Image 1 (tube, rainbow, N blue to C red):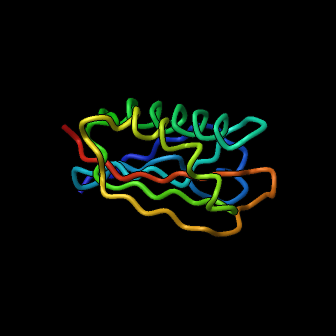
Image 2: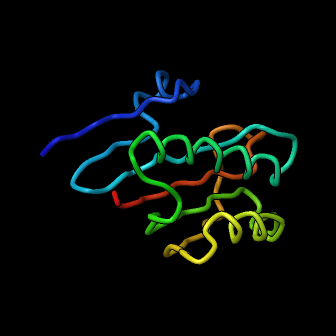
Image 3: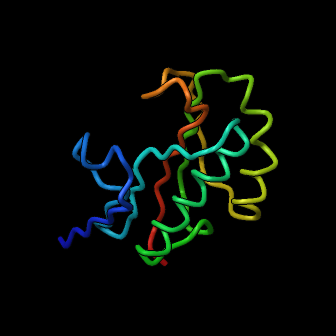
Length: 119
């Protein structure tokens, strides 16, 4: 099996020893991704932009995402992200999970992880 690793240059990739995405077995596994911004909405949009770039580099896109996990330190903030994630996945909604948990740094309000298939 061929395995391809995609790096985005994020600050934690080198520190924690991981890559943004791995393409293997017809799947694209995108690592948990945080975004930049002052609030959960800005960070959600930013994280999805980073994920979109990784999917594109892998040869996939949001239409082929089969699973998404949202992680937030405060679950009540997820409501503000619903219009963004709904617009992102549109007519192709993936299986989804939302987890309330601590993130690597308190400044982060959301982390998003996806798995997609290759078209």
